[in-house]
Image 1 (cartoon, rainbow, N blue to C red):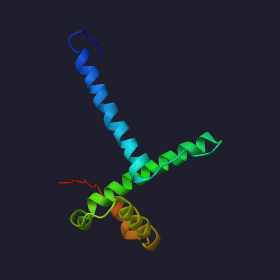
Image 2: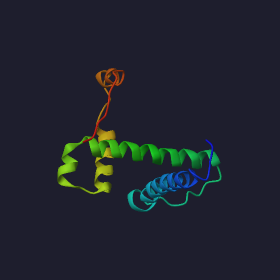
Image 3: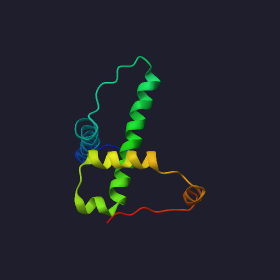
Image 4: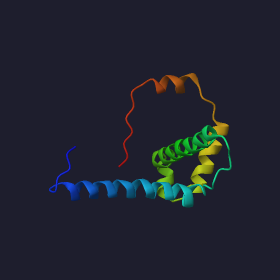
Length: 111
């Protein structure tokens, strides 16, 4: 990408916008959704794994929240949704049909 006087401000604005989106998402995870605190650990891989698990759990929670129509209508809190998702992981058993369903091509759409 060539940066010129003509496109420099557009490129800078795009970068700032992207940074804002990413920073806002992290701040929501840290302060609103999960109350993330500093992980006291000397093992760098353990810290990375902890952070990646938080990212995965956030993606799953968002899919769960968007996918269950009931949550959209009753407007329950994020912590309640997370608790219900965790409880479903504890209660539900993955069947062969579930695994076979994962092999099908699927598209997720939210309106």
